[in-house]
Image (cartoon, rainbow, N blue to C red):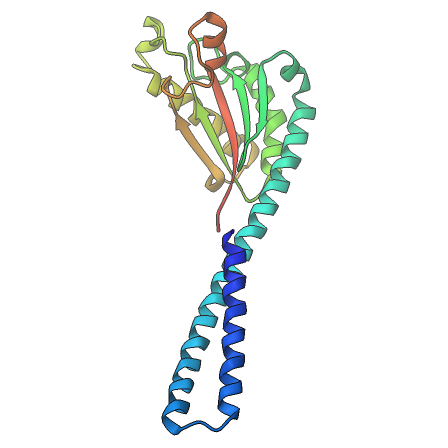
Length: 224
């Protein structure tokens, strides 16, 4: 039984007990019994107010969840329409998860080789995605950087000593473009670097490594 149904049942119990109280006081009762019933009625009123507040809160959360899912589904359809060519080329993967929308973009779509700098082509991709993200109000936008398990090359290591720095720098650079380039509210943006510790795909062959060098865009509802 979910929380909302439980609260409704408790509210129904309150009204049943209220009926019993009113029925009792209309009859012939002693003063002490009347006072006890009056006290019990006051307690029931307090509990009912608390139940109503909890029920309203649960309804509000439920409505927010429905609205968030509708926003995510709309963004899903727009993303698929905008990135169909890249999806067909297996450069982009879009999935609707239980509570959020996930978009994976492989490294070569966004970044210069062995770098956190967003390429010219990467900026074009973000220009196509940004309006969709901006319209998805009420959703946090998590930009999550991933790498493969190989350490940074000698050329990269001077700037990014480990995959932590590289993945975080990539996520941060994407966030900055979305904020400063496309006016997305920074309160909605989150930059995260996962290095190679949460791989998107299992395996160590070259194809898997290429898919693990990626950035995720996650649309997650903001709980009010």
